[in-house]
Image (cartoon, rainbow, N blue to C red; front, side):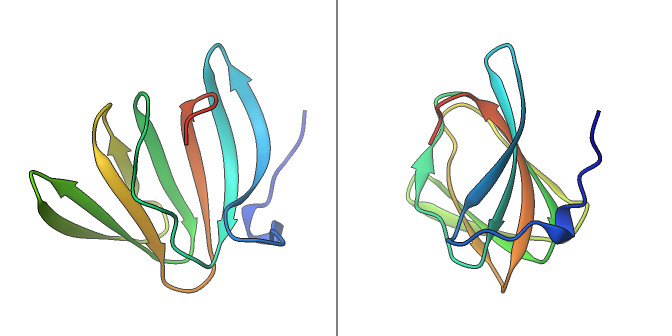
Length: 103
């Protein structure tokens, strides 16, 4: 058993992760970042939970880009095939649940 305080986790580079658990084919990871990720499409669904900080999630569908403001406690759920990129507004910590090996 362990207790994880997300606000005490800080990576050395953007999107560093603390591996928490793997359940079947899904990983649960705590990420720290202060830089945007990259546009991507996961090979399966993704659950992205903001624990600390503020993130603007950019989504692209049929060449249209929408932005969603995410605060602590907000959950972004990307389905298989949803193109997106996270842009933290300063340091942020997020819990990500996705298929193991997904980008």
